Amino acid sequence: MNLTEKLFYMPPVAAEHGARMDSMIDYVHWLMLALFIGWMGFFLYTIVRFRSKAHPRADYAGVKSHTSTYLELGVAVAEGVLLISFSIPGWVERVDKIPTGKDVVTVRIVGEQFAWNVHYPGKDGVFGRTDPAKIDTESNPLGLDRSDPAAADDLTTINQLHLPVDRPAVIHVSSKDVIHSFNLPHMRSKQDAVPGMSIPLWFTPTVTTDAMRERLGKPDFQYEIACAQLCGLGHYRMRGFLTVHTQEAYQAWIDEQTAQLAPAGEGDFWN
Image 1 (cartoon, rainbow, N blue to C red):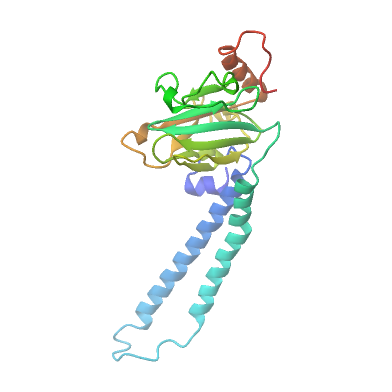
Image 2 (image 1 turned 45 degrees about the horizontal axis):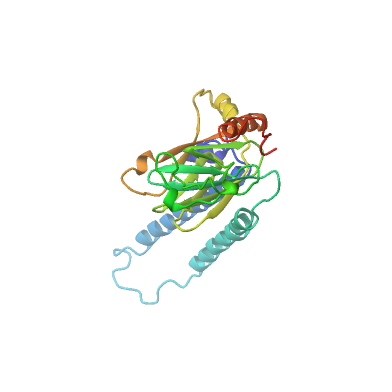
């Protein structure tokens, strides 16, 4: 358990970049604490130093010391270090360097009131066409057009995201209705789901669900997908779950889901 988890009651880190994210949170909060102590000390000093009994007449010359200027410069330098050393490199890594290649698992997540729709491409690695006219809230919430060859082998789930451990996962987040916010606290990943936009985020899970259950001593533990944006009266129940598998268990899950779509003997998907 790292310092952030202890001090701020954060859930255990389960993603490759999580420790760096927690370090930035630590530094920001230490800076906030220093600012709070410093400014409160300055406030108390001014109350005592310039109280009316000590200065019955106004002093129009004011304070001639440059101490406050030096303090403000120090705060600006500290904020600049946080920005240049952590925020900008973090932005470049998480936004401008989306991983590609055979090892990457690509998934679409589409939020709606009040569920998370999960869409996997098939063996071809191409997401099939969707058509709003084909949307059925019960059987086809994404409006997937199975007549499209690229959609024939696609997999969809509701509120259940499955990923393999130690492989980069690129999640394309969007929404069918209002703004939602796709939040995986253990993965230190969060992205707004905005209607009309598909926004990627990525992370690499490092702890399987079974391993986290053993670590926490909670046999029923599940990684939770939360909506971090108030999105309507049912916001409280917009909750999904992430299962992180070993590669073998993930492939077995894929095979099981695929078997319901394709005739037996078509082969192994996503090796």
